[in-house]
Amino acid sequence: MLVEREPETSHAIGEADVLAIDPALQQALDREYWQTPENGEALEMQTVDYRSTRDIPLGDVIALYKANGWSAVEKPEALHKALVNSETLISAWDGEALVGLGNAISDGHLVVYYPHLIVLPVYHGRGVGREIMRRLRQRYESFHQHMLVAEATAVPFYERMGFVRAGQTVPMWIYAGDDH
Ligand SMILES: CC(C)(COP(=O)(O)OP(=O)(O)OC[C@H]1O[C@@H](n2cnc3c(N)ncnc32)[C@H](O)[C@@H]1OP(=O)(O)O)[C@@H](O)C(=O)NCCC(=O)NCCS
Image (cartoon, rainbow, N blue to C red):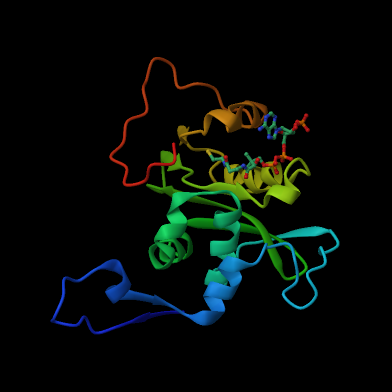
């Protein structure tokens, strides 16, 4: 949904020169995700089902991340590619509405890292995060080390999922965002 534009030579190249957002994607960004675009009424919460599909519309991903204020939303194309190229990707759906997702990358034998776990705010506290994490962990059950960097607000959630602080280790990163 992102189209590349030829940069003009008469001025410095900025972000707007490289990425022009498709109007349909912009519409998805502008609306509150749990409202239907047609009538603005809240979607009824039905049974949530879980899929390992890679066929997740970019607009849905952006709306999910935007609703949680995550900076990855500023790199929509990279975010989408990162998710669909993850070794494991579990998504949660209420009907055809994307309400959560989690991904895992691993060396295939010893170590697995869980980069993202995110649930649409109106679905928080309904067991969606737990079920996504259960399915991710199930795939890597025998692995020696399961790693993640937790938001401070999510620490109690991860503790309930069986994670503990990583001994005397300190998380370190080179990070392009400013949202932590
Ligand atoms: C963290 C997050 C993924 C949890 O998902 P969720 O679907 O709301 O969590 P669940 O409903 O599955 O909760 C499972 C258990 O954790 C508890 N829990 C969930 N979030 C909690 C929180 N912030 N503080 C304390 N307990 C929490 C629930 O009460 C529940 O407890 P129970 O075992 O007594 O039933 C979700 O809140 C979210 O998307 N947050 C924003 C993004 C984020 O911070 N992701 C983590 C990145 S490191």
